[in-house]
Length: 164
Image 1 (cartoon, rainbow, N blue to C red):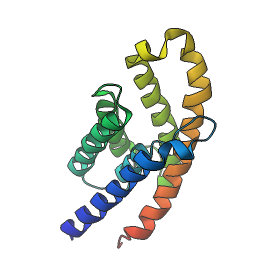
Image 2: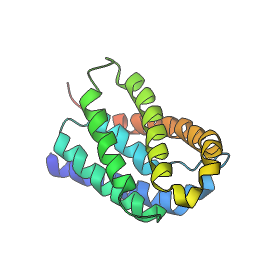
Image 3: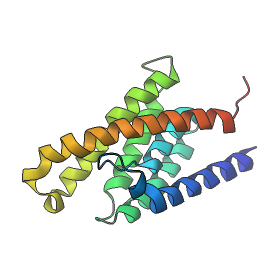
Image 4: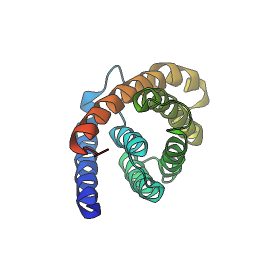
């Protein structure tokens, strides 16, 4: 069973990575490009029961996102690992509804990850454009990623049917 789950996650992650790399800039809404790998990671952190599995997936997807965005290595790897750990630890502690927690968590974590990314790359962005970028890029991207997380949550519940 574990090998079958590994294959499903690997194929889904590969499909999502290829989609983000190939079509990510074409599915942008008002300049906000979705982070499909981050959305997939958040949903996996909510649905999965093994922390080591989630953290390994976080490091791999973070490294892929760092390579994909190309502005230096480490910002997304660190923030993806932190986000996965935070999501895994708090998923049953705050709300009993996974979907409600996912919506709030995806929005807040996307906002925080992008702010962290902008602060670490302030030389490329410029300090004068910081608030404008937060308003015009980060907030729409947080809403966009939240919607994508809801879609991935629905797909995950169809692909990985769990027995009670």
